[in-house]
Image (cartoon, rainbow, N blue to C red):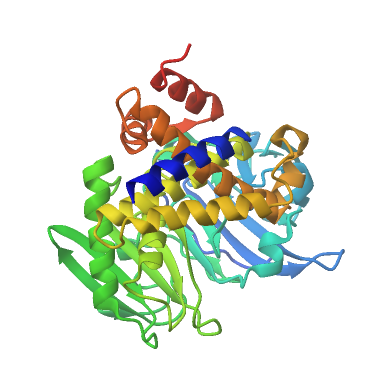
Length: 447
């Protein structure tokens, strides 16, 4: 076993080196200061664009109770589709108007809509998002889940928030139904069964479509809850145990989670009974599981560990959008490698799982048609529209993580220890590739 691991690590070292506007909106009473905007509402509709592709039409309504709106009014409109941030290519048909329907002058400048007006206290805005990448528009069921400051359609993000520090720091929630207006919602009593908009804050500002069962409680001193489709045939007791072990192991390795609880939304993939996948979210994560998903298996343990680690790397410690393609190896590849080890330390897998993770990454890397093409040769839009290229970040990043783990041990810390210290230093910050590279160079003893 030891010889296999060392031999494989050396191989990894070599591989890594290759290396409609008339509707009345629901008011959103957000906890802002009196000198900031007090109300915001918006709705999202799935539409078909002139080119025949699906897109999202977003309507926004803002108002100020104490006097007129700021003039000009600035609204940040940052569309992020699977990491794609080319606003110029994604966003079309930006329009604005006053309450009586008079058009207002609106321009988009670096992701911020600038609206000129004559002292009105409310305004409406509309724009259409047609992502260049087909990843969202081709696959999305447009069953949305919403998070604080984040709208999520099947795991792909659309961010929209006012240009205001008070807003960015506010603890607010949004309820979203495709085609309907949605509004904030205050805390509600715990329910064992719930549906619609009434039971959201328990799930960290996420809106769940249809009825769901609330399962879980305090497990080994940690609050862990599941929102599960009542028609699901999953073994929730085993799943809760698996999640609790991963959460405990992550606390030992990386410290407490950003939130004191873990809430997991379990969506049912009735049409794909053997499939299982997931995505990160604040306060926990989302699992999409078929009825035959291998609950309690090593593979599911690694998936749980991967999505849970994103609470540290990717949500609490965020990554700049402008160079997202340059940090994807770290936030996905390194996370994949660490997830295999975390699942092992959680007693949910055996040591062979780490080797299987590396073996799968190596096989995928060698078979990837883009493995010899430098990242610098790719444009942003080309990169995010190429699934094989994005997969390469997982594969190559996992192998590079294995090499880093070996190299860092020569200077003291393991890769997990390095990431724990890096997270502790940058928790709540937005970092870029330069910050990562400088920290690694220092840890490796290089100038």
